[in-house]
Image (cartoon, rainbow, N blue to C red):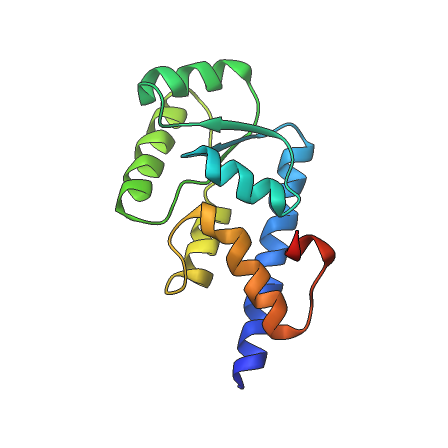
Length: 143
C-alpha cells in the first residue's frame, strides 16, 4: 500500500467518524471536550451542536448535571494520559447515573491518528493536511 493510499484510507475513516459525530449532534447529543480549542477545531470541521467543557468543575457534579438533561452523551476528550483518565472517570460517573456514553468515536480517532496527533484541537489541522496530501481540499480547509 502506497503512502497516498494510506492517507486516503485514514482520511476516509476520519470523515466517517466526523459524519457519525455530526449525526449524534443533530440528535441533540452533548459532546464533551476538554477545552475551547477543541470546540473550535470541531466547528471548523463542520460539527455543530451542544459542546460542554469537562475541565471547569468537579467531574461528579458535571456528570450529574449532564445526566439530568437526559440527552445522549459523546465523550471526546484528548487521547493523551489526562484525556484517558477524564474519559474513564466521566464514563463511570455517567454509567452510575444510568447513561451509557458514546466512547467509540474517540477510541477510533485515537487509533487512526495515534502517532500523528494526540488531541482534539489538532484534528482540524490533521484532516486539512490529509486532504491536501490526497488531493481532496475544500475552501474551508484554507480559511
